[in-house]
Length: 499
Ligand SMILES: [Zn+2]
Image (cartoon, rainbow, N blue to C red):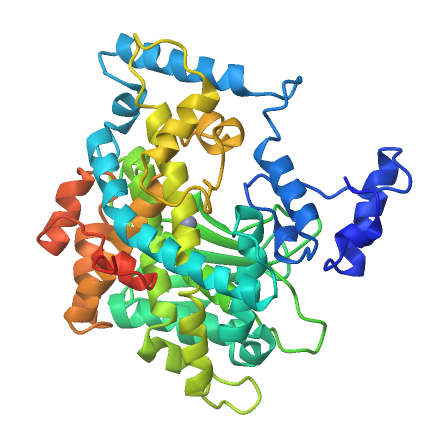
């Protein structure tokens, strides 16, 4: 909360008006209240020019659940951690992480911790490089203070604007939704897997904007149905996801009926349906889950398609994202909606370069959070009840990352994923699946890329398997070795020898 409008300099008029409204609704007239979202960094920190306001906002975020009031969660989380360790001991496991990882691909806390440790050197090196760059931007701004977490996003935005400002209005004319779907998403799937898509206007839909396609195998036999529900509506949940209306099962003699949902902004009537580069990625991502469901070939529904471990389920979807920027696929769908012209090379280069910006921060905050999760769930049943602040400080200090400038994406006291949302000893899964998808994409690259042969191999050995075998052997059967982090770091613009 701030008393003066000047303290909010940098925010747009709409944000200032809503901060004023927010204060009024709390009967704090003449004041301004900024919202907090559930991550350590706050969106307003990109724009606020007053450093005192930035610091105050950051500190409110960091200590939101540590104020000694009714919303202080520290006693609760230390009790949860202790009870989970006791539960694991009842099942004969040394820690909750060991208990919960047994049916995941990683299998053991040691494998997860080893994976996290491998990511640290390149991430820390990039964090130091980025911090130095931001310190320079601070000097160029005629300031003499030392960079702090509340300055990071503000100065990163300045650097980003100077170096890689990618304007979505420049790229959108090349991304028309129906062209992206048929000439991009479907095209890649046809090249890789031989499947084709026939529009089915005769099948009932729950909203007139929903598209339905019958998916056919290479020999023309039916594989399943695909529904696409892409547009934002007032009564629709946010975000994007894939699920099944009907799951595949030989036992029940059912073929998959799958839907992809997103929340794209619908164009005005008569206007072309243009989307952003993030939307394009979302379409390829959700369709990657759909392929995992369509190619399912299991007897039992509980092991079919996407019914797989947390540290495996995002592998097919993230893998499919790669085809969005694959030169052959990109050239096929990214065409100007009016002229049909290909996107200029300079603009394509800008999209690729922008993806590498600020990755020391982006990766570092997730690695730190993943380590915090593993530390809390590595506690032994006979360990004493922990002190939340001391435990967290020690766990973060041991990461080897620049946690002073790049704090974890979630602090222990507001890490909802691990305490309440089923990601206990599982937050690493986001990074683990990235390792898998980048490693496999690099395999494709070194074996000729977008070919039917490569696609068939991926379908036979990964996409059609569901959870009918362990994931480690499944990966190895495809690749001939265990997954490695090199391609993932390269994809983010970091390299292992970047130290
Ligand atoms: Zn996903």
